[in-house]
Length: 465
Image 1 (cartoon, helix red, strand yellow):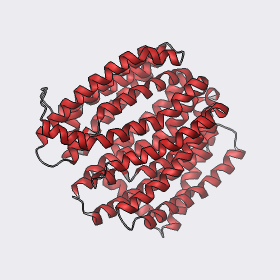
Image 2: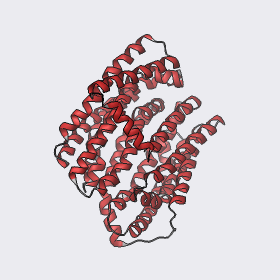
Image 3: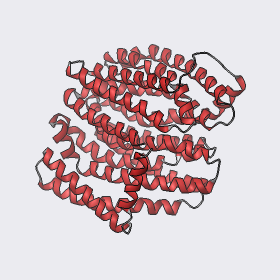
Image 4: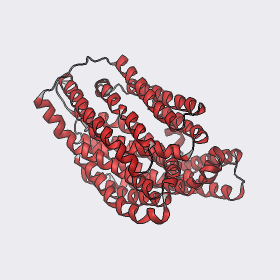
């Protein structure tokens, strides 16, 4: 998992360089295209990977059938995007969107190409072999995008970088777990996979809508705000979600391997939630408090409009990640519809909030709508986790309370520094150092001296894998 964390960190550092080299409009163009390509990708995924991993019995038949279904769905998705792209470009009065959507639709083919290898490695719990291609692909995406941006490719640097990175990921996966290209569709197995995947694909589509609805509406009402919002979202929400995805990729097959043993699953879920909270809560507080120093010192005044959005999204991202932690737990226990319900609740809340707040507030309104939905979702998720595994609600509250109190204490210290220090890289370094020292000290006090020891053990376990 440390490889994935490294990948997230390198990607985010690359995004800072790209923010300096590119204009907010470049991010807006690619961000809008990604919304529609991502929606098609969710449909093409259809939860087939999770269905194959969770399924017992012959892996070879399930993987080949799942790959065939993925190919058919990818073709449908690409054709749909090819037809819709000109209409989408007209809706946003941005002709560049047509070519960008067409180009990014190739990601659906690349996703299919890596399906069999990725599922086979994940099902065998070969996590490091799955993560290494992702890390390599992420590095290629980052460095190729930066290189092309230096050459003046504007938004195309982001598009081509994404395609190159995905290609490297697929090629490495194939080298680790080769598979023969051949269409094989076992009707009985296909029926089982589709039945299992249907709630997941509905959940995936709802999740895509949850994240994309505000972007789509903001692009129509206030296109100039879109790039600023997407940059703030990248840090306030995408970073903690990337960490959560790393954890989730490991924990879902682990939960599934426990074969419905609720006592073991409960213990693993609480342990995972505790470690996740200790990372994402202080991160969210720091982004919220130090947003002016962070953005202006690193990427310049042209991104200043992102500051109020990052203040809100820092908290929203933290709450979203904590609320989403129970999803892999629910699926492993045979309740994939829980993810559908979770995303439906979020969408029901985010749509009216977005429609009410975006016209007067622009990107800041989208940020507030995400925060409001996240607050409702953590209440929902905690209650559903308690229903699935009795006796987790009170431990969860205790788990969240300790890093929250410590982060607030550290946040107050940083807020004082933000108020008195002029914006600079030096000030950012001081604020980060003070935040870390204050957080660690408070965590040590509140955990009775266990925090540093447990953190060292956790790091050692990652490095040893």
